[in-house]
Amino acid sequence: MSLVLTVDGDRWRAHLRGVAERHPGLVPVVKGNGYGFGLGRLARKAQWLGVDTLAVGTYDEIAHVASRFEGDIVVLTPWRPFGTAVEVLDDDTLVRRVIHTVSRTVDLPDLLGRRPDARFVLERLTSMQRHGLAARELWALAPTLADHPKARLEGIAMHLPLAQGSHLSQVGRLMTDVVGAELPAVAGARRIWVSHLTDEELTSLRASYADFEFRPRIGTGLWLGDRGALRVTATVLDVHAVERGDSFGYRGRTAPKAGHLLVVSGGTAHGIGLEAPTGDLNLKGRAGTLARGGLDALGFVRSPFSIDGKQRLFAEPPHMQASMLFLPAGSRVPAVGEQVDVRVRYTTTAFDHVVLG
Image (cartoon, rainbow, N blue to C red; front, side, top):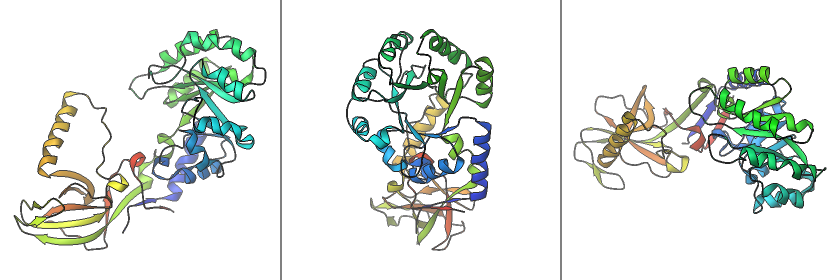
């Protein structure tokens, strides 16, 4: 009676091992809902992989992983002088493990003023234009570092976009800025933390900059890289035969034709029926969005639930913990208690159970 993620354990673990072996210096990203697995479970898997560092998205996520992973924890959200980011500095045990991200020149003196021995990476602004230091700002921090001998610079971070095409030319320009910054001659100054580079790009960069250490931060490609090892299912909770014109549901809709209404586990509380903004901006993508809007007005929206290999329609918008589907006459009607497949976006789905084989 739940929305369940079932994992082929042997296949999934083999995939994790394979990613770790192909990516020296791997930093698993453990953030948000834990890619559907949960933060704690992924922290334990990072420990099992034997990596020395994992990345979380926010300071509030540290508490979910710190007791399950023994290594260092790098926070991807940049440090700011307020909230949990400041509270972490008061924990003497934890502060030795946490690596902050500094993305503004004003924040580094503030951070080191509160904690002279703080560990941090300097984030370089990329074409993402989200967080980061421009070239001149990076260069301007060299004197600040020189004035704080206890400061622990752990490297330069580069968060690159997901857009298609090679990132090598952009990273090459960013690396020129790093070299020109004349940062203190510490090991961390020659460590580069990168996101969203292909295996081929990493190999090329390691050959071109042999005196630098590249640390790839990987989330989706690690935890969700082998979708064949994952299966999401819902339970059929009820089945009702309907004739054309029969009223049903919260909103008193009427059946467009004869068939069956299926009530299945999984609703908005799980993330079912909630759609993130799309990045598809071409004409076809916009037309699809308009078409879905029209279907929604009529109640004929394709659901993520599949029966006998075919995605079925929502009979009405999903409820909090269950969804109602319409199955036209002539289709096989599943029995109450039967499991049906569900196609979900893992990063926005909350499962009732995760069964790891």
